[in-house]
Amino acid sequence: MAKVLAVNISDRKGVVKHPVDQAEFIQGGIKGDAHCGADDIRQVSLLADESVDKMREMGLSLGAGVFAENITTQGIELKTLPIGTRLKIGETIQEVSKIGKECHHGCAIKQQTGTCVMPTEGIFTRVIQGGIVRPGDSIEVI
Image (cartoon, rainbow, N blue to C red; front, top):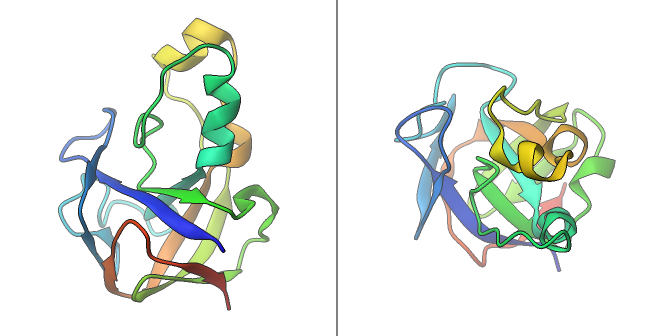
């Protein structure tokens, strides 16, 4: 079963996001997150923990939110979902809007390893129906 491993937010752009017990998803993104309302295509970012494992295998100690993802997932191959796919995540409905997230210029992980999983394995969604999302919530393609 696909599930939410962590929900992560930050009050500033360009920093590691920190895990929270729950977050309120609204039209435009996540209430309290620096990226909320800034972009219609990139409202919420998701990355599979299985993708993070690829970087951990390179000897890096990485926790949830280190790639600035809002939702860390487990048990779903995000990179295979076509744009337009709708997901029920917790109380929300979200729609895949973009595949891949470019690393920012000073990406420490890319500088250390020469590679990063976000450009090919991270995805973005837009919030179609708001609600609360918590770690442990199920994720299903609808």
